[in-house]
Length: 353
Ligand code: SF4
Image (cartoon, rainbow, N blue to C red; front, side, top):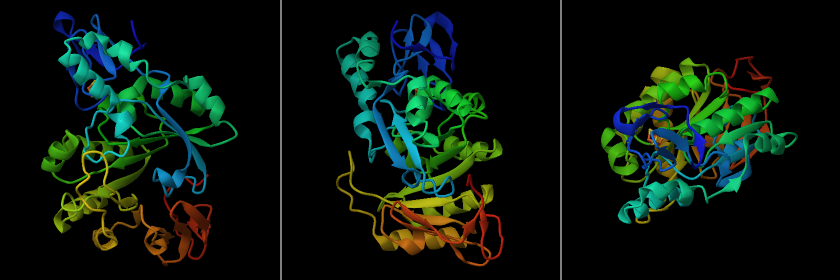
């Protein structure tokens, strides 16, 4: 057997299984893997092929996730594996996120899908949960599961998150928001913050560009807030794809209906992967989105991937005092005092200590 036994799945008839880690709920035949390419049915049991195998590891500023209301100015130990449940044509980490899918396509062509386990487990550094936590201690107060969609490596994430919490570290998921209810409940109490992508506001966009659907993402954003997780939302604004007033207003009004205090990051697109023919997002488009967010009643809207201190800093929604100034990933605490505005005392939501 290759990999590590999965917990999130159900056995079906004739050796098939149904994976319950994400909202695709793949039904997987013996010898085959799900859409993400890293959860494989081996003789009627599901195995995670990338357990303890990190494909990318970095010490990042937490602002890069982006999280602006979560331990500002701190470093975050960041890791991801190969494999993803989305197939976004603009993915900036496509070399790892789509690697398992490419292997599966090749093996299917060769009619050898059962070799997926052998091929996928060759990727990545050996990094078991205990070692991640050891590396993190004394260097960073939190761990981010990021680069690819973390719920696809649920068992690796969950075991690491549990150990991390025992050692006083916090856990962050940077997610496309496709977690199943089973995964959300399994991770309950272990995840301190999430940055969830809301990549567009139509099913058409999600189907065509991401090979997924919209509704599960909206559900995850609501659910994460209900479960008490600190949530910030990111939209990569792509010219001609999701930058119309209607689309941005739809996102902003949805977020405001969940929680007006939930930060919304509007980030600039740069040509990548299969989207090389689209230009970079103009600053004026991002500023239009900023205005739409504010008009919808959101208290904290931020621009990203651009140098614009005014629109990436935090101001008190009550008295408009500058609380945290930001330039790219550099920050300066201005009037924020223990999570409150130093001028008027208004409580600023987030995780500050
Ligand atoms: S994690 Fe999602 S994409 Fe991967 S096998 Fe499970 S249901 Fe399918």
